[in-house]
Amino acid sequence: MEKTIKVEGMSCQHCVRRVENALKEIDGITEVKVILEDNKAVIETTAQIEDKALVDAISDAGYTVTSIE
Image (cartoon, rainbow, N blue to C red; front, side):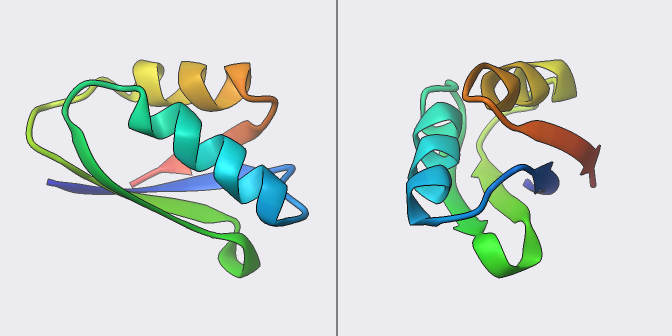
């Protein structure tokens, strides 16, 4: 299953790594790709992951989720 997460507040590659690392900590996520230019993260999962878990992980890293598709 693929989800696209729009993330605000990223401005550099350090921000990209922080978001990537935060998402990789969630069980069930198999792949994470953060695209700074598009302000988004695309994840692949092996299990159903609640949107709240994604929002919480990114918020804890210091960024804001504006939408999840």
